Image 1 (tube, helix red, strand yellow):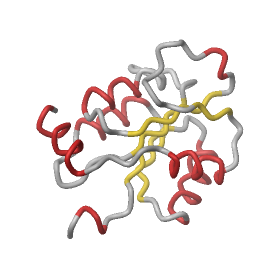
Image 2 (cartoon, one colour; image 1 turned 120 degrees about the vertical axis):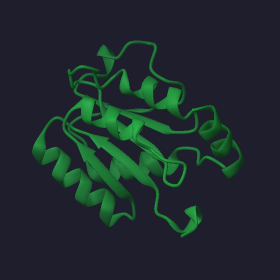
Image 3 (cartoon, helix red, strand yellow; image 1 turned 45 degrees about the horizontal axis):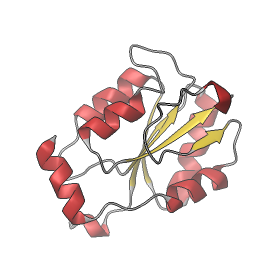
Image 4 (cartoon, helix red, strand yellow; image 1 turned 90 degrees about the vertical axis):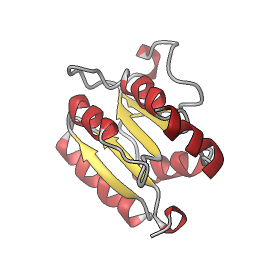
Length: 139
């Protein structure tokens, strides 16, 4: 199956079970494939397990999650593995995010409505096959 025919793949890190479940359902209803996780370690394993055949398009990370790797640092990990991946931070207090968030990563204050997240994802730049391919070879 060609990549162009696959729906965008989103990894969602949400520490709260209810938020994770509702957001996953809403993203799937909006046409996204979603891998959800409850810890930053789970997300890191998913990112490291990517293949050239199916790459993550967007990481939505709860910056308030504290784990082996915190939710904030996951944006940098994802961009190291694939510079074309979109990153969105969610947090209870946007003022607590360090100034060093990854370039172009919007922040969504929690609690949020799923349609707000869908709108942010849709507004992220879509990687082209050319720059995506270069990122895969570099990883």
